[in-house]
Amino acid sequence: MESIFYSVRMRASSQGRHCSGAERIVPREAVAETSSALLMRAFSNVSAEIDQASCQVERIVAHELCFAGLPDVITYPVDNVTAGRSLAHRLLCRAGVAEEVATTALQLLARGAGPAGQVMRGAVLMDASSGRRLEEDPARGVRVSRMDAAPEFQDTLQANLRHAGLEHFRVREALLLAGKVLGAPGLIAELCWSDDPGYMAGYVAVPGTGYQRISRMKETGDRRGGRIPAGCRWRSRAESQGRWP
Ligand code: WAQ
Ligand code: MG
Image (cartoon, rainbow, N blue to C red):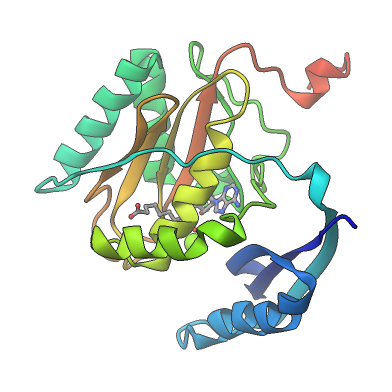
């Protein structure tokens, strides 16, 4: 009989604003425990006044799962934000992102990529040669979802991250997300740093090169962050459906 897995996705909001989200893919017997662990995570953040939280559980048939290796991880320690962003710029250009597009991408995350400078819920999709934004809704962006480490690999991943001094849950999650993004056709690089005001590291992930962490991408206390996968030969949904935005 084919194994059954469930995608468990949690999101929490405060005054209509997204404030926490996380997800796993787990076997049936772990659904209840996983849902409560994800909700616990939202509610353990004492600074957030949560108004709404939900956990969505969705069945996934095992033969629909895709497996891919995770990218290699390298960390570049930098002294300050200027050095971090200038390194990210170089890594993006080296990957094949046009120089002005790399500049635009960094500026966009620095000032808040959503309308009126808000943080987006998902990612900006950017054409790597023109800098054109392709996501349909610039407030929501595009969400990467339904990803996890394979069950038999969970412990090794955790141990390897711990061994490298990278046990923060953000590293595991960002690495898994980047692992999925790197498999997207046409992807050239993904730039990211967190919107958590207390988490300053970010990364530039590049197919074939890896997950290149940069220790400091923003100032302490800055609530802006985001994600920008940049690629080539991408079209917006409207264009691929023959409509123009
Ligand atoms: N799909 C697409 N974009 C997302 C998703 C998603 N599932 N989740 C978050 N984003 C976007 C959204 O705009 C957030 O504001 C932004 O990314 C940052 O999300 O190696 O923790 O969850 O030390 O705050 C990177 C460095 C940490 C980790 C990234 O992102 C490391 C992080 P956060
Ligand atoms: Mg966040």
